[in-house]
Image (cartoon, rainbow, N blue to C red):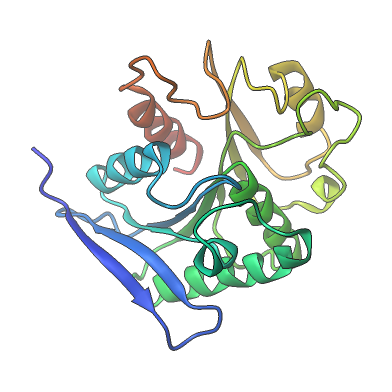
Length: 220
Protein backbone atom coordinates (compact mmCIF):
# COMPACT_ATOMS: atom_id res chain seq x y z
CA UNK A 1 0.00 0.00 0.00
CA UNK A 2 1.32 3.43 -0.97
CA UNK A 3 1.71 5.52 2.17
CA UNK A 4 3.68 8.35 0.59
CA UNK A 5 2.18 11.82 0.75
CA UNK A 6 1.23 13.51 -2.53
CA UNK A 7 0.45 17.23 -2.70
CA UNK A 8 0.04 19.78 -5.44
CA UNK A 9 2.99 22.14 -5.27
CA UNK A 10 3.44 25.77 -6.30
CA UNK A 11 6.32 28.12 -5.59
CA UNK A 12 5.28 31.42 -7.12
CA UNK A 13 7.85 33.59 -5.38
CA UNK A 14 10.43 32.69 -8.03
CA UNK A 15 10.41 33.42 -11.75
CA UNK A 16 9.66 31.22 -13.60
CA UNK A 17 7.30 29.71 -11.05
CA UNK A 18 7.69 26.10 -9.98
CA UNK A 19 4.46 24.10 -10.31
CA UNK A 20 3.73 20.42 -10.06
CA UNK A 21 3.30 17.63 -7.53
CA UNK A 22 5.46 16.82 -4.52
CA UNK A 23 5.84 13.21 -3.40
CA UNK A 24 6.97 13.04 0.22
CA UNK A 25 8.19 9.58 1.28
CA UNK A 26 7.16 8.02 4.59
CA UNK A 27 10.72 6.78 5.08
CA UNK A 28 13.02 9.40 3.51
CA UNK A 29 16.57 8.50 2.54
CA UNK A 30 17.62 12.16 2.50
CA UNK A 31 17.96 12.50 -1.28
CA UNK A 32 15.60 14.18 -3.74
CA UNK A 33 14.72 14.07 -7.43
CA UNK A 34 13.20 16.67 -9.75
CA UNK A 35 11.40 15.11 -12.72
CA UNK A 36 9.97 16.85 -15.74
CA UNK A 37 8.18 15.93 -18.93
CA UNK A 38 8.62 15.82 -22.69
CA UNK A 39 7.53 18.23 -25.41
CA UNK A 40 4.08 16.75 -25.89
CA UNK A 41 3.13 16.04 -22.29
CA UNK A 42 2.98 17.51 -18.81
CA UNK A 43 4.06 16.37 -15.37
CA UNK A 44 0.96 14.21 -15.01
CA UNK A 45 2.05 11.78 -17.73
CA UNK A 46 1.82 8.08 -16.97
CA UNK A 47 5.59 7.63 -17.11
CA UNK A 48 6.45 10.52 -14.80
CA UNK A 49 3.77 9.59 -12.29
CA UNK A 50 4.88 5.95 -12.17
CA UNK A 51 8.54 6.91 -11.85
CA UNK A 52 7.84 9.46 -9.13
CA UNK A 53 5.82 6.94 -7.13
CA UNK A 54 8.59 4.34 -7.41
CA UNK A 55 11.28 6.77 -6.29
CA UNK A 56 9.15 7.99 -3.39
CA UNK A 57 8.61 4.37 -2.34
CA UNK A 58 12.41 4.06 -2.24
CA UNK A 59 12.70 7.07 0.06
CA UNK A 60 13.34 9.94 -2.35
CA UNK A 61 11.57 13.28 -2.07
CA UNK A 62 10.27 13.77 -5.63
CA UNK A 63 9.01 16.87 -7.37
CA UNK A 64 7.50 16.28 -10.80
CA UNK A 65 6.98 19.66 -12.35
CA UNK A 66 5.69 21.40 -15.46
CA UNK A 67 8.25 23.26 -17.52
CA UNK A 68 7.59 26.98 -18.09
CA UNK A 69 6.43 26.40 -21.67
CA UNK A 70 3.72 24.04 -20.43
CA UNK A 71 2.70 26.44 -17.69
CA UNK A 72 2.15 29.12 -20.33
CA UNK A 73 -0.06 26.94 -22.54
CA UNK A 74 -1.70 23.57 -21.85
CA UNK A 75 -1.09 22.04 -25.29
CA UNK A 76 1.44 22.17 -28.07
CA UNK A 77 5.22 21.75 -28.27
CA UNK A 78 7.75 24.20 -26.83
CA UNK A 79 9.06 27.07 -28.92
CA UNK A 80 12.82 26.86 -29.58
CA UNK A 81 13.32 30.37 -28.22
CA UNK A 82 11.81 29.26 -24.88
CA UNK A 83 14.42 26.59 -24.18
CA UNK A 84 16.57 28.85 -22.00
CA UNK A 85 13.51 29.77 -19.94
CA UNK A 86 12.64 26.10 -19.54
CA UNK A 87 16.15 25.46 -18.22
CA UNK A 88 15.75 28.37 -15.82
CA UNK A 89 12.55 26.73 -14.61
CA UNK A 90 14.47 23.52 -13.96
CA UNK A 91 17.14 25.44 -12.07
CA UNK A 92 14.48 27.04 -9.89
CA UNK A 93 12.92 23.63 -9.27
CA UNK A 94 16.22 22.13 -8.16
CA UNK A 95 16.91 25.07 -5.85
CA UNK A 96 13.39 24.85 -4.39
CA UNK A 97 13.78 21.14 -3.64
CA UNK A 98 17.27 21.69 -2.23
CA UNK A 99 15.72 23.88 0.45
CA UNK A 100 13.62 20.90 1.55
CA UNK A 101 16.33 18.26 1.96
CA UNK A 102 19.85 17.99 3.32
CA UNK A 103 20.87 15.29 0.85
CA UNK A 104 21.67 15.13 -2.82
CA UNK A 105 19.32 16.59 -5.41
CA UNK A 106 19.10 14.80 -8.75
CA UNK A 107 17.52 16.10 -11.93
CA UNK A 108 15.65 14.01 -14.45
CA UNK A 109 13.39 14.33 -17.41
CA UNK A 110 11.62 12.54 -20.23
CA UNK A 111 12.69 13.36 -23.79
CA UNK A 112 12.75 17.17 -24.21
CA UNK A 113 12.82 17.62 -20.44
CA UNK A 114 15.84 15.36 -20.18
CA UNK A 115 17.59 17.11 -23.01
CA UNK A 116 17.17 20.47 -21.30
CA UNK A 117 18.41 18.91 -18.06
CA UNK A 118 21.64 17.80 -19.76
CA UNK A 119 22.20 21.24 -21.27
CA UNK A 120 21.55 22.86 -17.89
CA UNK A 121 24.08 20.51 -16.30
CA UNK A 122 26.75 21.67 -18.78
CA UNK A 123 25.90 25.29 -17.96
CA UNK A 124 25.84 24.75 -14.18
CA UNK A 125 27.76 21.54 -13.40
CA UNK A 126 27.36 21.87 -9.63
CA UNK A 127 23.56 22.16 -9.76
CA UNK A 128 22.43 18.50 -9.88
CA UNK A 129 24.19 15.58 -8.19
CA UNK A 130 23.29 13.43 -11.18
CA UNK A 131 20.92 13.04 -14.09
CA UNK A 132 18.12 10.59 -14.92
CA UNK A 133 17.35 10.70 -18.63
CA UNK A 134 14.26 8.87 -19.83
CA UNK A 135 14.18 8.40 -23.62
CA UNK A 136 16.78 11.01 -24.50
CA UNK A 137 15.73 12.40 -27.94
CA UNK A 138 18.99 11.73 -29.74
CA UNK A 139 17.63 12.93 -33.09
CA UNK A 140 14.22 13.66 -34.64
CA UNK A 141 12.47 10.53 -36.00
CA UNK A 142 13.79 9.54 -39.45
CA UNK A 143 16.51 12.22 -39.25
CA UNK A 144 19.51 10.33 -37.83
CA UNK A 145 22.03 12.96 -38.95
CA UNK A 146 20.41 15.74 -36.90
CA UNK A 147 22.06 14.71 -33.64
CA UNK A 148 21.37 16.59 -30.42
CA UNK A 149 24.78 15.88 -28.94
CA UNK A 150 26.78 19.10 -29.45
CA UNK A 151 26.94 19.64 -25.69
CA UNK A 152 27.78 16.04 -24.76
CA UNK A 153 31.58 16.63 -24.60
CA UNK A 154 30.94 19.27 -21.91
CA UNK A 155 28.71 17.03 -19.77
CA UNK A 156 30.57 16.22 -16.56
CA UNK A 157 27.55 15.22 -14.46
CA UNK A 158 26.99 11.46 -13.96
CA UNK A 159 23.98 10.33 -15.96
CA UNK A 160 21.72 7.30 -16.16
CA UNK A 161 20.03 6.91 -19.55
CA UNK A 162 16.91 4.74 -19.88
CA UNK A 163 16.02 3.95 -23.49
CA UNK A 164 13.59 1.72 -25.37
CA UNK A 165 14.68 -0.52 -28.23
CA UNK A 166 11.82 0.76 -30.42
CA UNK A 167 12.40 4.46 -29.79
CA UNK A 168 12.26 6.33 -33.13
CA UNK A 169 14.37 9.13 -31.61
CA UNK A 170 17.41 6.85 -31.56
CA UNK A 171 18.39 3.19 -31.46
CA UNK A 172 20.38 1.57 -28.69
CA UNK A 173 23.40 1.40 -30.98
CA UNK A 174 23.10 5.07 -31.89
CA UNK A 175 22.80 6.06 -28.25
CA UNK A 176 25.71 3.87 -27.18
CA UNK A 177 27.87 5.58 -29.78
CA UNK A 178 26.70 9.03 -28.66
CA UNK A 179 27.45 8.30 -25.01
CA UNK A 180 31.14 7.89 -25.85
CA UNK A 181 31.20 11.68 -26.28
CA UNK A 182 30.31 12.22 -22.60
CA UNK A 183 33.33 12.45 -20.25
CA UNK A 184 31.24 11.88 -17.11
CA UNK A 185 30.26 8.50 -15.74
CA UNK A 186 27.23 7.19 -17.59
CA UNK A 187 25.09 4.10 -17.76
CA UNK A 188 22.55 2.97 -20.36
CA UNK A 189 19.59 0.91 -19.16
CA UNK A 190 18.19 -0.72 -22.29
CA UNK A 191 14.47 -1.53 -22.27
CA UNK A 192 13.54 -4.15 -24.84
CA UNK A 193 10.39 -3.73 -26.96
CA UNK A 194 9.68 -0.28 -25.50
CA UNK A 195 9.02 2.87 -27.50
CA UNK A 196 9.61 6.52 -26.69
CA UNK A 197 7.07 6.51 -23.82
CA UNK A 198 8.85 3.46 -22.29
CA UNK A 199 5.76 2.07 -20.56
CA UNK A 200 3.70 1.59 -23.70
CA UNK A 201 0.17 0.24 -23.97
CA UNK A 202 0.96 -3.22 -22.65
CA UNK A 203 1.80 -3.78 -19.01
CA UNK A 204 5.35 -2.89 -18.07
CA UNK A 205 4.62 -2.37 -14.41
CA UNK A 206 8.03 -3.48 -13.18
CA UNK A 207 9.98 -0.92 -15.23
CA UNK A 208 9.77 1.95 -12.69
CA UNK A 209 11.21 -0.35 -10.01
CA UNK A 210 13.99 -1.46 -12.38
CA UNK A 211 14.82 2.19 -13.05
CA UNK A 212 15.02 2.91 -9.33
CA UNK A 213 17.24 -0.11 -8.73
CA UNK A 214 19.60 0.86 -11.56
CA UNK A 215 19.63 4.45 -10.27
CA UNK A 216 20.47 3.40 -6.72
CA UNK A 217 23.26 1.11 -7.91
CA UNK A 218 24.72 3.75 -10.21
CA UNK A 219 24.60 6.59 -7.70
CA UNK A 220 25.36 4.63 -4.53
